[in-house]
Image 1: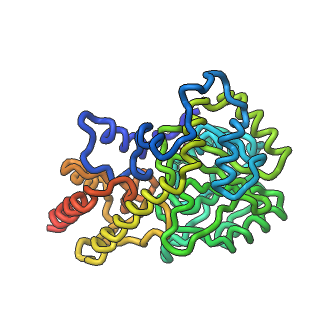
Image 2: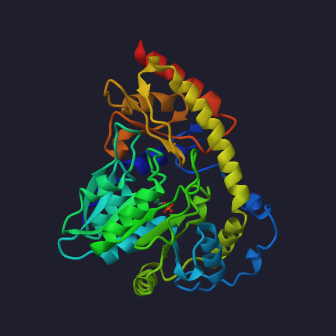
Length: 369
Ligand SMILES: Cc1ncc(COP(=O)(O)O)c(C=O)c1O
C-alpha cells in the first residue's frame, strides 16, 4: 500500500522540531501548551507514582471512561478509549470496510481521513462544504452524495481547517436519514466544545451517531495521546473493543491517569483556551478588516483554525515559505488540496500573537509590491 505523503505533518515537523524551533507557530491546530507540572497543579486527585505499569483494560480504565462520559454528557458504558482520535477513526474505517464500500468525507478536510480510509481499502469520497457561505455544513449537501456504496459518513464539527459548525438540527436530521439506510454517522468532535457563537451540545447520544474525540485539540494536550469513541450500540462496541485489542492492546495506565485528571479539570483548561483563542480571533478580525492585502477569510464559528484564501487564486506556498523565514508559520493550503488557501492556528499562542501578525502584515505588504 502506497500512502500519500502527509504534507501537513512534514511541513509542521520541519519547522516545529527544528533547532531552534520556529518562533511563532501559527500553523498548529492545538491550544495553549501545558506541562505535566501545570496539569497536576490544577488540583489534587492524580497519583501517577502509584499507577501500576500493567496493561489497562482494552475499552479503557473506568475512571477515564467516566471522565470522558461526563465531558460529553454520555453514559460511561458507551465510551471506548483509544490512542488519540486517530486510532478511533482507524478502528472505525477498518470495521466499515467491505468490498466496494466507500466512506463520505468533508471537502476540505483533515487529510488523514482519506489516507486512513485508503489504508483500510475503504474508498474515500467527498461531500463539499459550501465555500460561498463560510464553509457551511448542511445535512442536504451530505445526503446528496450518499449512494449504495456508502458504508459510513464523517462529519467534523467544529471543522478543521475552516472552523465551520454543523448545526445540531442538521446533525440530528442527517443521523436519522442515514440510519434509515443503515449507514452510521461518525461525528469527529476534537474541537468541541470551542464555539464562538451559540454553544452546541455534543452529538453523543444522538441515535445512529458514533462520536470520536480526544484530548489533543480543544483540551490542548496532544502529548497525552488520548482519544475515544462513544457508541451506544453494544454489539458494534464489542467489535470496536476487539479491534482495539488487536491494534494496540490497551492505553498506557499513567497516561490514562493524567488524562482522567485533565478531564476532571476541563473547566480550567477550556477557560485558558477560550481566553487565548478569543483574544487572537479579535486580532485576526483586525487583520482581515483591511482587505488591501488580498487575503480573505470566513470567520470561524468554532475550533482553533481559520482557512483564509488569496482572492487572486495564487499558490500560497511561496508566501508561507517567505513568512517562515521571518519566523511565522502558517500551513500552506496545498496540504489540504487548496493551494490558494492558508491554515492559521490561532489558539496556541497568547502574548506573541500580535507580534506574529505584524510580521504577517509586513510580509503581505512586501508580496503585494
Ligand atoms: C479533525 C481531526 N480529527 C482527528 C485528529 C487526530 O488527532 P489525535 O490523533 O491527536 O487525537 C486530528 C489531528 O489533527 C484532526 O484535526
